[in-house]
Length: 623
Image (cartoon, rainbow, N blue to C red):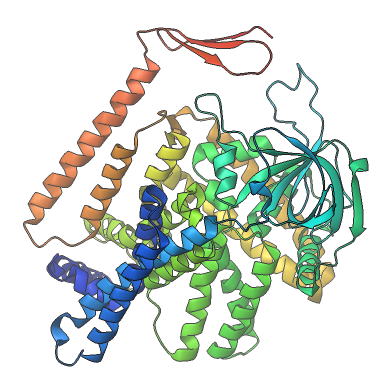
């Protein structure tokens, strides 16, 4: 898009005004109302626990009203679309409440109904759902003071429980912990275990992670503690159906294609598995903390960037082979399906897959896809699968960052180009020197990358501050530094996997390059993490300031029919007020003028944290 078209687009957005914003959204992104309805319904039902009959009656009323309105649409053309979208919002709110109620309702023979506050000795049978994860406890801060055994954890779909009268059918998903490393179990194995069953306990210390609430959102309420691998008896191995066998084989083949042919060190191997296959279990603790501290953690979480580069690589290969657009789209759809079978089904991955799938389908129907509409469709799909994802940081951060890109990326880029008088915009109509043209193109790409990174940071900063109590103000700058290596790793990594089946020798040589790039990326990210100003720890922040931040973003994103200077003044005053509030919170907690004692629950013994005036902290551990 040239500068003139960009300016015309800005003028059209400013002239739209708030009076037509609702109508524009209804006409261009009707699925947005469905997604908002689901979110509102889940939130209301989570707080109020209204009866199911109330939501069903409300659903019938507004579904009937929307049907009547649609049949009489020729008589009330002016407001038909807006009324239908409003009815859709209310109907999907009812659907969200009903889905949450059904999801949280246990079956009569669910294991959670029979386990009390005291742990119970039991013999269970079930099928393994996830890959057993071996935890070495190497990052435990007190490892040099107390020995920590290696343990194994996985999820089990419960099938039977032994009772006094024999085996009885049972249901539910439980989390199994084994006090020894296990390497011979795979998803789909049917086993029998002698264990202790117990409910997850809520945290007893301030700031401690609430694992009970976290697992309850996944409908997991019971843990099984197995003392040793001798207490596990494998009944059948991986006979859970053809789908599980195919998925397991594809996962093993992809890992072998990426890592099996080269001598890769542990650090780079863990990064490559996280970056290309979505498995972050083998990434080292230092590397993970460096990505988190610099705000680059989204690079090792499979999302739209990874899907875009994967499909771009496949599209280019198909184009080189001479395939037409519809054939390329069909190959990309097959690639998306296979990739989903290989990677873990996390919220950012499913969101990106839905958007990519809709984009590919648009070539068959000759329709232009709407980004906000496809993002709303992804939210609807994920919330219908598991509505409690709405309360998880990963889901919120994924959608907030993408929504920030859709709403602000172009505006930030236009603002930068306007302030630089479009000197950084490449103008192909003018005959300039090759060096100047290359420099201008490079500067334009940097501006675009900065705009996208800053827009994503705007969308996700509130979520990061609420859950992780810190902000990374230079994340968009570090994105520009690291992105070339990330793009190279993704392109060469996916190309290595593809060439593994076609040209194994070339794939092996390419693996050496991928390994060197991975080590270089780890070195750069760790170097950036050492800078103190790349990470600002503020501490726990109440919910209201976070809501105020997103209300400000919503006000800035949508057109305003009044005086533009008034809108800028309101935004400036709100930004200054929020910055002053967060700055005051940071100053108060960094420069304390009081003594605070916190007694920790550590079972046997005593532990007290003394926070002294001036910022010093002392831990008294009485063992």
